[in-house]
Image (cartoon, rainbow over all chains, first blue to last red; front, side, top):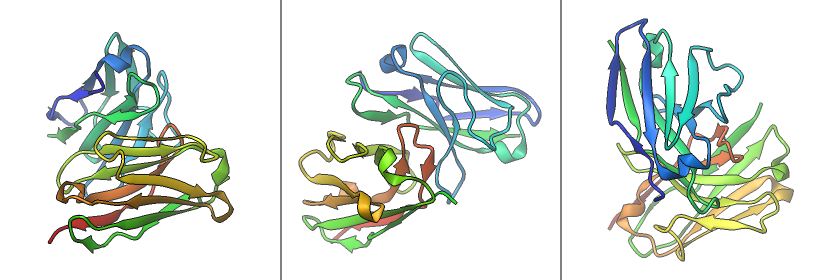
Length: 108
Length: 115
């Protein structure tokens, strides 16, 4: 399968911890990357590789993986973390890419 | 500053053609794989195509294979997407993105396919 599945919506109380998940067969072979997209803006890479953050991404963002599931965890969610989050990885062929359907995160 | 700037998006009729461009600056363009990704209004991201650093390898999503062609001109630090036989379902904001990590994105150019 070349699909990645995400929950459409997740909510978290301000300052609490939230986990956003991404499931797909290709995740058994390839790491997921995670992107944050705020309304009217381009996506921003927040996690890549095993658990790496680009420069400028707060350390409250972390990534993990087990079997066919990748997770993005926000520890101590802030109001500015409210956004859509997308995972992606290579597909099973290794030559093409696929995005998950996205998760809308609401910070209450 | 590392930057990608897309251009070329317009309103086009079904069956028409269009060429999108992406101008890169602030990094060594010919060191990197480049991608096109699209996002229909109000919907999620869809990977469209990638091209290797030297243009020798290209790959496409099934939804555009045979209709779209990705290319690059490293002497001009530019990426292109030739879009033929356009369909209404190709209506989307088209982004270019840098590297296998998609670590830098442009702001996108809007393509509307409508009669």
